[in-house]
Length: 476
Image 1: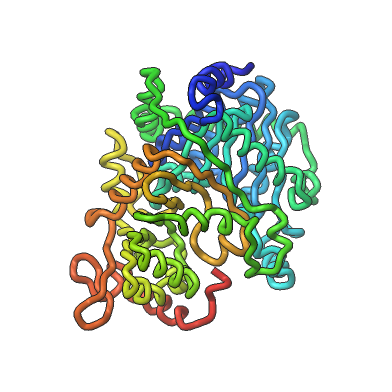
Image 2: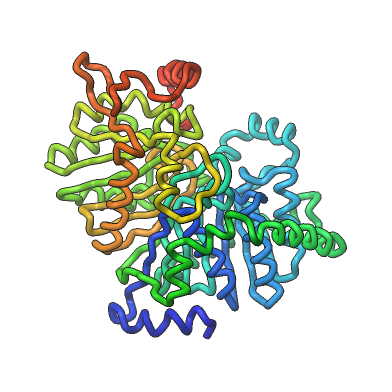
């Protein structure tokens, strides 16, 4: 048994007759990075990573350095990345990993061409194929511990840099990790997962790897005593680990994932085997309370009618998404804005994250303040009657539900649901978000008396309003 298995197995046996898994919410970028770093350090057999984006920036470099160190001690490392987020220098960084004999990298639904200009041509000529992406996010150690949620790998997901994504992951240990591994294996062995060495210029060169590794080590050595590293030591998870007092919730859980074959179906296809079809019954069964966090929220008419039916049944429905000033993709806001009034008229409460929320959340997260001047919502989670919670990669928009593949975990735990509900309450508080309501003249009004998109300037609202009249829902 590995160290992780020796620590987790007896605790699983003592809780829920061996069927329950342990869960720890990771609501801050610092905790999320620490959790991944700890799993890498403790792994003895396997590390499986599945991501939409993997940036070769500060935090990405630190993770790569640790992955290589794990491979040096004999851990088999597999990295499955969507090809949307790999290009030129990123390609070289990822390919360098594959040069290690214990590390294998595959790209999902890869472009045929690697350069930007040729990629643009491929996007135009093969749009139906390359527009479909793997949006899944998983980090699995020894098949016994897993991290699922909304975060990719990169500075903006871990609280570094100008943009700070407000996100949420969950660390799971026990049977849930087996389910997570099974999902990873399905994607790893699918027809869409292509070894990076088969993509033209990426033939392994053993002579290059030592040089690239030395450069990586020098870069990481320069980060060891950075403000970020000091902040990591102050994170709540790091403090709990040092005190050997890791608070977790034990519960039944189910990993839910789209099948890779979703990419072969026509865009717009609805299927009960898709993730959306599997979690909608839980939203339909809610009797008192439904909380939705979706940074990209485009409900369309069917979604408006669904939430309206929940309100007619007496269910409180509250939705948190990005404000136009906070979103990193203003075109998605163009798809969302026309549904605000119908949702409000049917009794749904809407909240939009403020761009200045980053500073307020960081003041609470750590004694050390680092990075970021602008916040953007990136977490995806749904709370059902405060008794169960879904945390994953899926947005409530047509792209997530009908085109891309997604993954997440449904946890039947009132305690974990209460934690996520408290996070919703904090994110939707007046300090961090605007509540959108109907004004006296029939228009919209935001907290603070705004009657136009707050803090969004001139051009963003103009562009969003123009595009909101176009039939773009299926593209976003």
